[in-house]
Length: 84
Image 1 (cartoon, one colour):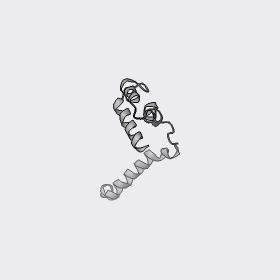
Image 2 (cartoon, rainbow, N blue to C red):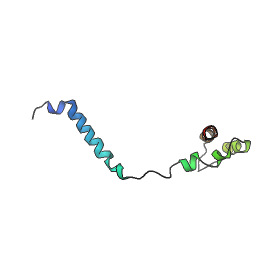
Image 3 (tube, rainbow, N blue to C red):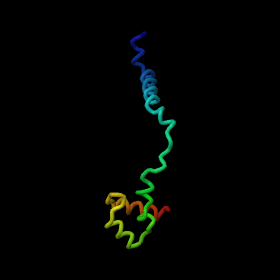
Image 4 (cartoon, rainbow, N blue to C red):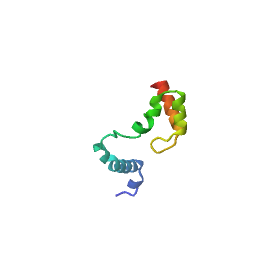
């Protein structure tokens, strides 16, 4: 075998493609995630409550899902209000 065989770019690309296929091939039989963070974090009682003072105050003072994240909740509320 010629010593230049292992230094050709095509050989390196072929090896890289084989590695990528070997790593990602098993995911072809996986299902989609049906319960991710959208159900409890993005679409929740704060998001669906609308832009009302009581809802804005509840976001600022309350915990939801074990976390205190008023900035995230305000952003989700604003996006949901503007875009639906």
